[in-house]
Amino acid sequence: MNAISILFINEEQLHRFAAAFAQCLTKGDCVALEGDLGAGKTSFARALVQSLQPTPDDVPSPTFTLLQTYPVQLKHGIAELWHYDLYRLKNEEELEELGLNDALEHAVTVIEWPAIAARYLPSDTLYIRIDKQQDEFARLWHFSYPSRWQHYFDILHTQGWISQ
Ligand SMILES: Nc1ncnc2c1ncn2[C@@H]1O[C@H](COP(=O)(O)OP(=O)(O)OP(=O)(O)O)[C@@H](O)[C@H]1O
Ligand SMILES: [Mg+2]
Image (tube, rainbow, N blue to C red):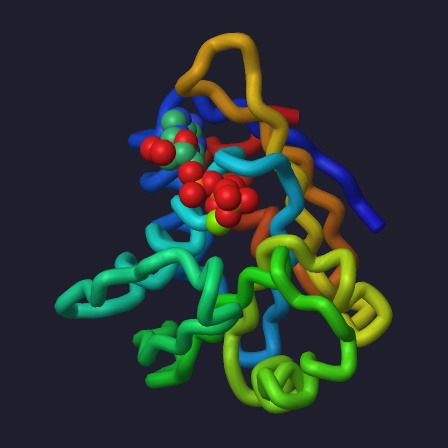
Protein backbone atom coordinates (compact mmCIF):
# COMPACT_ATOMS: atom_id res chain seq x y z
CA MET A 1 0.00 0.00 0.00
CA ASN A 2 1.40 3.40 -0.99
CA ALA A 3 0.40 6.70 0.54
CA ILE A 4 0.49 10.27 -0.69
CA SER A 5 -1.23 13.49 0.28
CA ILE A 6 -2.41 16.45 -1.76
CA LEU A 7 -3.56 19.81 -0.44
CA PHE A 8 -6.39 21.38 -2.43
CA ILE A 9 -6.65 25.06 -1.71
CA ASN A 10 -10.18 25.39 -3.07
CA GLU A 11 -12.97 23.52 -4.77
CA GLU A 12 -12.03 24.76 -8.23
CA GLN A 13 -8.64 23.07 -7.89
CA LEU A 14 -10.36 19.90 -6.71
CA HIS A 15 -12.55 19.94 -9.81
CA ARG A 16 -9.51 20.20 -12.05
CA PHE A 17 -7.92 17.29 -10.21
CA ALA A 18 -11.14 15.26 -10.55
CA ALA A 19 -11.13 15.81 -14.32
CA ALA A 20 -7.52 14.57 -14.54
CA PHE A 21 -8.17 11.64 -12.22
CA ALA A 22 -11.33 10.66 -14.12
CA GLN A 23 -9.28 10.16 -17.29
CA CYS A 24 -7.39 7.34 -15.56
CA LEU A 25 -10.46 5.33 -14.52
CA THR A 26 -11.34 1.93 -15.89
CA LYS A 27 -14.10 -0.61 -15.18
CA GLY A 28 -13.59 -2.45 -11.92
CA ASP A 29 -11.99 0.50 -10.14
CA CYS A 30 -13.30 1.10 -6.63
CA VAL A 31 -12.75 4.40 -4.81
CA ALA A 32 -13.67 4.65 -1.12
CA LEU A 33 -14.11 8.20 0.20
CA GLU A 34 -13.72 8.84 3.92
CA GLY A 35 -14.09 12.14 5.76
CA ASP A 36 -16.46 14.14 7.92
CA LEU A 37 -19.79 15.56 6.88
CA GLY A 38 -19.11 18.33 4.38
CA ALA A 39 -15.57 17.15 3.66
CA GLY A 40 -16.27 17.15 -0.06
CA LYS A 41 -16.88 13.47 -0.89
CA THR A 42 -19.99 14.21 -2.96
CA SER A 43 -18.33 17.24 -4.57
CA PHE A 44 -15.59 14.94 -5.85
CA ALA A 45 -17.97 12.23 -7.05
CA ARG A 46 -20.05 14.87 -8.86
CA ALA A 47 -16.98 16.33 -10.54
CA LEU A 48 -15.86 12.86 -11.63
CA VAL A 49 -19.22 11.97 -13.17
CA GLN A 50 -19.71 15.30 -14.87
CA SER A 51 -16.23 15.33 -16.36
CA LEU A 52 -16.95 11.92 -17.92
CA GLN A 53 -20.18 12.98 -19.64
CA PRO A 54 -20.61 14.94 -22.88
CA THR A 55 -23.72 16.57 -21.38
CA PRO A 56 -23.28 16.53 -17.61
CA ASP A 57 -26.13 15.04 -15.55
CA ASP A 58 -27.29 16.44 -12.26
CA VAL A 59 -25.44 14.49 -9.57
CA PRO A 60 -27.41 14.70 -6.33
CA SER A 61 -26.02 13.29 -3.11
CA PRO A 62 -27.20 9.68 -2.67
CA THR A 63 -27.88 10.48 1.00
CA PHE A 64 -31.35 8.92 0.96
CA THR A 65 -31.33 6.77 -2.18
CA LEU A 66 -27.94 5.29 -1.08
CA LEU A 67 -27.08 4.73 -4.76
CA GLN A 68 -27.15 6.72 -7.98
CA THR A 69 -25.86 5.34 -11.28
CA TYR A 70 -24.57 7.26 -14.29
CA PRO A 71 -23.45 6.46 -17.83
CA VAL A 72 -19.89 7.67 -18.34
CA GLN A 73 -17.41 7.78 -21.19
CA LEU A 74 -14.17 6.18 -20.01
CA LYS A 75 -11.06 6.14 -22.16
CA HIS A 76 -11.74 2.47 -23.03
CA GLY A 77 -15.41 3.03 -23.84
CA ILE A 78 -18.86 3.58 -22.39
CA ALA A 79 -19.37 2.32 -18.84
CA GLU A 80 -21.28 3.20 -15.70
CA LEU A 81 -20.23 4.92 -12.53
CA TRP A 82 -22.11 3.79 -9.42
CA HIS A 83 -22.07 6.32 -6.62
CA TYR A 84 -22.92 5.02 -3.13
CA ASP A 85 -23.42 6.85 0.16
CA LEU A 86 -23.59 4.22 2.90
CA TYR A 87 -24.01 6.63 5.82
CA ARG A 88 -27.59 5.47 6.36
CA LEU A 89 -27.09 1.79 5.58
CA LYS A 90 -28.20 -0.15 8.64
CA ASN A 91 -27.30 -3.64 7.67
CA GLU A 92 -24.49 -4.93 5.51
CA GLU A 93 -26.76 -7.58 3.94
CA GLU A 94 -28.44 -4.72 2.06
CA LEU A 95 -25.26 -4.26 0.05
CA GLU A 96 -26.29 -7.15 -2.16
CA GLU A 97 -29.65 -5.50 -2.90
CA LEU A 98 -27.74 -2.38 -3.78
CA GLY A 99 -25.85 -4.39 -6.39
CA LEU A 100 -22.42 -3.86 -4.92
CA ASN A 101 -20.97 -7.03 -6.43
CA ASP A 102 -22.21 -6.08 -9.90
CA ALA A 103 -20.85 -2.60 -9.49
CA LEU A 104 -17.43 -3.86 -8.47
CA GLU A 105 -17.30 -6.15 -11.47
CA HIS A 106 -18.78 -4.01 -14.24
CA ALA A 107 -18.68 -0.36 -13.24
CA VAL A 108 -16.51 2.26 -11.63
CA THR A 109 -17.60 2.28 -7.98
CA VAL A 110 -17.34 5.35 -5.76
CA ILE A 111 -18.40 4.92 -2.13
CA GLU A 112 -18.93 7.55 0.56
CA TRP A 113 -18.92 6.26 4.15
CA PRO A 114 -17.42 2.89 3.06
CA ALA A 115 -16.74 1.48 6.56
CA ILE A 116 -19.82 -0.76 6.66
CA ALA A 117 -18.80 -2.32 3.33
CA ALA A 118 -15.12 -2.70 4.19
CA ARG A 119 -15.00 -6.48 4.12
CA TYR A 120 -16.80 -6.63 0.75
CA LEU A 121 -14.49 -4.21 -1.01
CA PRO A 122 -11.68 -5.52 -3.19
CA SER A 123 -8.14 -5.49 -1.83
CA ASP A 124 -7.18 -3.09 -4.62
CA THR A 125 -9.64 -0.41 -3.51
CA LEU A 126 -8.25 3.13 -3.50
CA TYR A 127 -8.94 4.76 -0.14
CA ILE A 128 -9.08 8.54 0.09
CA ARG A 129 -9.44 10.33 3.41
CA ILE A 130 -10.37 14.00 3.20
CA ASP A 131 -9.51 16.29 6.10
CA LYS A 132 -11.00 19.74 6.47
CA GLN A 133 -8.53 22.53 7.23
CA GLN A 134 -8.72 25.78 9.15
CA ASP A 135 -9.21 27.58 5.85
CA GLU A 136 -12.82 26.74 5.00
CA PHE A 137 -12.05 26.18 1.31
CA ALA A 138 -8.97 23.98 1.74
CA ARG A 139 -8.92 20.20 2.08
CA LEU A 140 -6.02 17.83 2.71
CA TRP A 141 -6.44 14.55 0.84
CA HIS A 142 -4.71 11.36 1.95
CA PHE A 143 -4.55 8.56 -0.62
CA SER A 144 -3.79 4.94 0.27
CA TYR A 145 -3.38 2.99 -2.90
CA PRO A 146 -2.42 -0.54 -3.85
CA SER A 147 -0.31 -1.36 -6.90
CA ARG A 148 -3.33 -1.39 -9.24
CA TRP A 149 -3.32 2.40 -8.92
CA GLN A 150 0.41 3.04 -9.24
CA HIS A 151 0.19 3.77 -12.94
CA TYR A 152 -2.58 6.35 -12.37
CA PHE A 153 -0.55 8.10 -9.71
CA ASP A 154 2.48 8.10 -12.01
CA ILE A 155 0.35 9.95 -14.58
CA LEU A 156 -0.94 12.40 -11.97
CA HIS A 157 2.67 12.94 -10.90
CA THR A 158 3.78 13.85 -14.42
CA GLN A 159 0.85 16.27 -14.58
CA GLY A 160 2.19 18.04 -11.50
CA TRP A 161 -0.53 17.00 -9.05
CA ILE A 162 1.91 15.20 -6.80
CA SER A 163 5.07 16.93 -5.70
CA GLN A 164 7.13 14.23 -3.96
N1 LIG B 1 -11.87 22.35 -1.39
C1 LIG B 1 -13.11 21.91 -1.30
N2 LIG B 1 -13.40 20.65 -1.68
C2 LIG B 1 -14.66 20.18 -1.59
N3 LIG B 1 -15.71 20.87 -1.13
C3 LIG B 1 -15.49 22.13 -0.73
C4 LIG B 1 -14.19 22.70 -0.79
N4 LIG B 1 -14.28 23.95 -0.30
C5 LIG B 1 -15.55 24.14 0.02
N5 LIG B 1 -16.29 23.06 -0.22
C6 LIG B 1 -17.74 22.94 0.07
O1 LIG B 1 -17.88 21.95 1.07
C7 LIG B 1 -19.10 21.24 0.85
C8 LIG B 1 -18.81 19.76 0.65
O2 LIG B 1 -20.04 19.10 0.66
P1 LIG B 1 -20.21 17.60 0.20
O3 LIG B 1 -21.68 17.34 0.12
O4 LIG B 1 -19.39 17.33 -1.01
O5 LIG B 1 -19.58 16.83 1.45
P2 LIG B 1 -19.64 15.28 1.78
O6 LIG B 1 -18.27 14.90 2.22
O7 LIG B 1 -20.23 14.52 0.65
O8 LIG B 1 -20.61 15.23 3.05
P3 LIG B 1 -21.62 14.06 3.55
O9 LIG B 1 -20.81 13.18 4.47
O10 LIG B 1 -22.68 14.81 4.27
O11 LIG B 1 -22.12 13.32 2.37
C9 LIG B 1 -19.77 21.85 -0.37
O12 LIG B 1 -20.68 22.83 0.05
C10 LIG B 1 -18.59 22.49 -1.10
O13 LIG B 1 -19.00 23.59 -1.89
MG1 LIG C 1 -21.83 13.27 0.50
